[in-house]
Every structure is written in C-alpha cells, then in structure tokens.
Image (cartoon, rainbow, N blue to C red; front, side, top):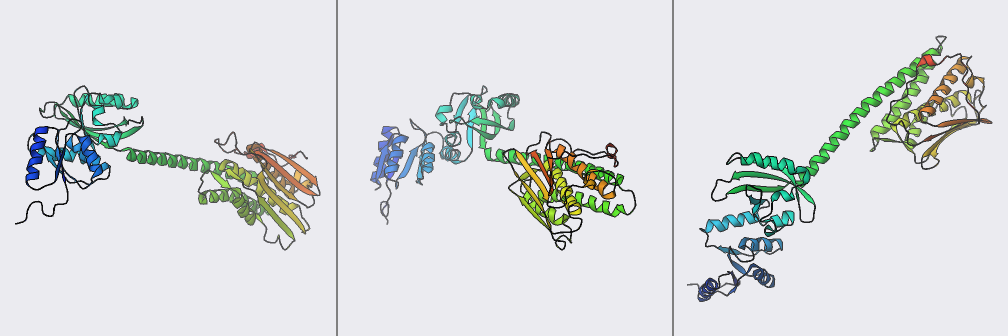
Length: 455
C-alpha cells in the first residue's frame, strides 16, 4: 500500500486566522505525512508563495486582511499558478466555488443599496479601475460616474428601483483611480427584495475599445458624408463653369468654320478640369492636388502633335506645390489658356523657339506661376478684337484675368523678346469654401477691347 507522503514534493501552506483551527489542521496533515506550514493572514501567504512557488494553498475564505479568493487573484496577476483548496464555514463548498468564479472573471460584480452606496465589489475592480474593493465600499457609486453621465444614470436607477426584480442595461463613463475614465457597459438587477442580496446587483464590463471603434466609425461616416456633399458641390460648380465657357466660346463664333476650332479649345479647357479630378482620385489626400504630376499630364495633352517637328520645345518645372481643388481648377485653366495661346500665336512661322512653364512657392503663403516664350511677343490679336484669332485670344486672356481674380492673385505681362506672364496668388484662398465663379456671356462683348497692364 502506498503511503500518503510517497511521491509528494510540494509543501502545504495553511492560511487560517483562527489559531486553534490552524494548529488542528497542521497536526492532522503532519500525522498524515505531509509537510505543512501555517500563516494567519493573506499578506503572509503572499510572502511565503513568493519565497516558495511550489506551495499548495489550503485557504480559509474569510481572513482579517483579505478574502481567500483575493489571494488567488493576486497570485495569478503576479504570474503564479498555485494549486489551492478553499475551506469555509459559511455554507457548503458551493460558496467557495462561486466566490472563486466571481474573483476570476474579467467583469466586475458589485452590489449597491437603494441609495447607490457600494456594499460589495469583486476583486477585479482593482484591475479594471485601479480601486481595491475596500476603497469603494461605503461610497456612492455615482461619485465616480462622469459628470455628463450623472443625470442619465440617476434616471436609469430611479426607474429600475420602481420595479422589483427588474433588469436593465446601460453605459456610462466611470472614473479610475488615476483620474481617467473608462466606458463601461453594465447590467443591473433590482434584487432589493431578495434577502440574500438586498440590493442592486451590477455586472460591469469595460467597453472603452468598442466605444473608440464606434467613434472612429462615426467620424469616418461623417467624413464620407462631407466628401459626398463636396463631390456634388464641385460637380455642380464644374458644370456651371463648363456651361459658361461654352456660352462664352459660342459668342465668339461667327463663320461656321470657326466651330471646330472652338470645340477644340473648349475640349482643352474641360480636359484641364478633368485632370484635376483624375489627380484627386489617384491621390491619398482627397483635399490637395500634386501640381507637378498635374502639369506633366496637362502639357502632354495640350502639346500640339507637330510642335517638335516645328522646332518648338516645352520646358516645365513645378517645385513641391500641392494646391486645394478650389485653387487647382482655376490654376489649371490658366495654364491651359496661356500654354495653348503661346503655341498658337508666339511662333506664327514655326520654330525654333521655346515655351517655359514654372510653378513654385515664392514664400510660405505665396505661389508663383510663370508662362513665358521667346516668340514674337504680344501682337494685336492678343489684345484687341477684330480678327477671329484676335477674338479667340481676347477670350482666353479675359478668362485668365477672371481666373486670377478668383485666385485672389495678381498678374503682370512682360513684353520684349517674347512674352512672359507672371501670376502670384496666395496658397490659402479666403473664399476656398465658396462656390466657383460663374462667367455670364452677356458680361462680355467680343468687339470690346481687352486691356491688360504691362509690367
């Protein structure tokens, strides 16, 4: 027959505050051949386990400084996995088992009276809120509810207390010991009339991470709604601009043969607006356009197919400029007008010659745009109506002037050996949230003289 002490390698630690009972248990264990020790408090038990992690615990549930289940929870939090057995004189063994289960679940179990005073808090309150159960007992639970949630919580509990055995669920922000707040979801059961509880039984659960996810989801939804409204707003503005441009162009068409050229010019203007939205769609930032990429695509589109054969070269440079959509569209239209104007009028006899386009930051708040050529310079067709080319150029320069105004900028034209358009405008427009300027064809007369001040 195998003796009880054969193969036993763990000592037993008896945690019992009743000295007489503790001695009796130790004597019985020693008689059975077990190595047993005894301590009267939970604090001493924790010290013994720290010194000898191989101990087996025989625990009384009710101790002077803490409960036996608190010892188990503390040891688990410190990384110890110690076998334990509960002893209790309060009912049968089911009490100890139930208490151990409460101590080890992630939720916090609490009991408050009809006035909201804490009568019981499970040990996990320390982990969740930083408060030990002893610090909360006798204090109103409403003292730790966020001020903005106080009214809703008192109303919730007031309604709950009107109906015995009723149950409800709610959420609030609860203060931790370090002063921060956590979102908790709790279920409350009115057990005031239950003689075993005689209070409101609460089950707390930390839902802070879920609330953060919900808030982020709500913000994303709001951003998408704002973006959708902005898309509709921009579409409406762009259609208005296109309509106005076509109306203006039609007023300059006299003989039918000018219609094809008018369609080509209108196509280029619409394409400039299209490239802005293409860049926006491909960008990770839905609010700004990389003007270097935009300028590269735009010049490839407006560059005539025979430009290189005629000896006309195009040089572009854009240095780290990203503009808002409200600034990119008028800026793109300005570039389209000035570049196509240079190709059509600066070199009537063909090349050699060059067109230079630069776009850069002049200081923290000012953007500089320049389109220059070494062609024949501004002639009558650029400034005055009369010929079909002069009227077409006049319309283009009229649009440029109005678009510069929309950008809240200034424009100077240098004339001499070629033409040099220099435009400066602020990066942040004061009317950036306002609608696009709509150009009404009746405001212009193709026969009028369009004057632009020379530098």
